[in-house]
Amino acid sequence: MVVYYDSYCKFCKTSATLWTKIDWAKKLTFNSFRTLEDYPKEMEKELHVAYNGKWYRGYNALIQIAKMLPLMWPALPFMYLFKWIGLGNFLYRKIAENRKLVPVGQCDDDSCELHH
Image (tube, rainbow, N blue to C red):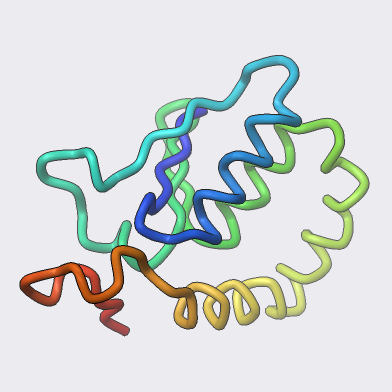
């Protein structure tokens, strides 16, 4: 499974580091989409995961990551419940929209801004 995260986002980098530490079976590969020459702009708005020829985004990507990490399995029933009632996607969007990007103030154009 390939996890495409935002390396300009401290929260995203911290999450990727944590997931790497608990990925004992080495099932996840982490790539910053910022290193890709031509990435889809949707990647700036939410986490993307590629697995078995399918793409997962946002909260669904988090669920796929949790399925790969045994330490996260106890959270899966709650994650699916939150998905079913719509709270998971809502919370994910709120966090994603309000995250801070670094390097703040070091961009010459609007490439570091989040566009909602």
